[in-house]
Structures are given as structure tokens and as C-alpha cells.
Length: 195
Ligand SMILES: Nc1ncnc2c1ncn2[C@@H]1O[C@H](COP(=O)(O)OP(=O)(O)O)[C@@H](O)[C@H]1O
Image 1 (cartoon, rainbow, N blue to C red):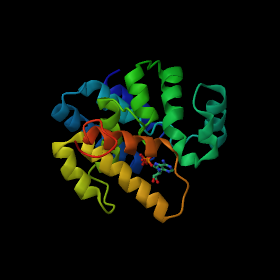
Image 2: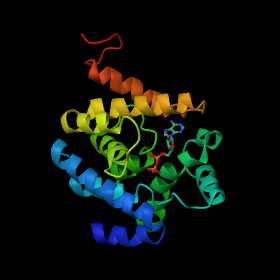
Image 3: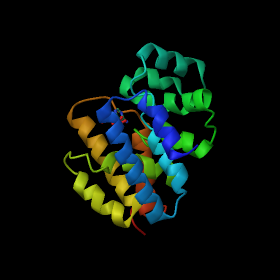
Image 4: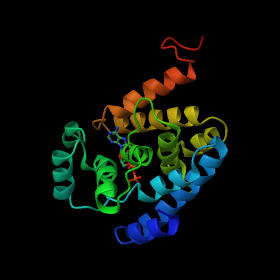
């Protein structure tokens, strides 16, 4: 599927502000794909669909989680976390997008997870640093994204965990697994710090 066709689809589901965010995520994902030699077409397509289900009725998302292979523990956490996993299922069902890499990048764009692929890291990071974002710490992650995608994703997952802890909110464990895995990758595979 080409960029314009994908935008035409998501347009119907997203308010103008969210569409503009989506287009900035797609542009950021394209830049990161170039920088890190990833498949740019896949990165852009995953970015365009990353918030495809952001405004689906909660009941529909809940049913999708129950009836699909998605992890059921999502239902014990904030519904804000449902739209990525649900989109990974519904883009296949509703638009025939079966590509596993694209679907995983969409599924984990909010939380991250252990052993993220390059494409998954690109969409996770693009959503975090697109130029419209201006929360504390984003500049530091943007600078890291220029040099080292692992370090940038590590910092983003760390920031998200700290942010949620400060607010006293529950944290879906995949973000901890992302943080731990990226810490190991930065330390050359060791759990005990840099060798
Ligand atoms: N592991 C987690 N547990 C709970 N909430 C999380 C987790 N990771 C991210 N969030 C929160 O989920 C919300 C949605 O994030 P995100 O999907 O990145 O936004 P967007 O839909 O704009 O792309 C944010 O408020 C973020 O802090």
C-alpha cells in the first residue's frame, strides 16, 4: 500500500490534530529509516497506521483483545494502551496489511518491548520525538536519536517509566522489559554494566 492510500484511510478515523501528529510521525520515521538503513516504505506505513484505532469505541477494542491472540493482560491496564495492539489486528482484517514487521511496530509503539526490531524502535521513537512533542526530556532523546537509536529508545523508555511512577500510575510491564533489554544492549549484552 502506498503512502497516499494509507493517509486516505486513516484520515477517516482521526481528528485533524491527530492526523497532523501522524504525518509528523511518518516524516520522522522516514528520516530515521534513512539514517539507520531500515525499510523506509514499511516504516512510513507503520507510522501512518500507528494511531489508526486511537478513537475506536472502548467496547470494540475490548472485544478485539478478547477474541484475538492479543495478550489479555492489556485489559487490566489503562485503555490508552489498547489502540496499538488493536490496530495491529484490525489493519490486517480491514485493509489486508499482513506484514508481520509492520504489525509488530504498530502493536508495540506505545510501550515498546524486549528485543524490538529496528522497525519497532523507529516507530516507537518517531512517536516520542516527532517535532510536535515538547515534554521535558524530549530534546535529549532527539539528540540521541541522531547518533544511537538504542540509546534514544533506552532514554525514552526510562523517561516514560519515571513519568508514570511520579504520577503513581500502573506501568504495563513491556516498558520495563524494553528498558532492561535496551540497557543490556547498551552494555554489550551484559546485565552487570559495561564490560
Ligand atoms: N507501559 C506503560 N504503562 C502505562 N502507560 C503507558 C505505558 N507506556 C506509555 N504509557 C502512556 O500511554 C499514553 C499513550 O502514549 P502513546 O500511545 O505514545 O501516545 P500516542 O497515541 O499519542 O502515540 C501516554 O500517556 C504514555 O505515558
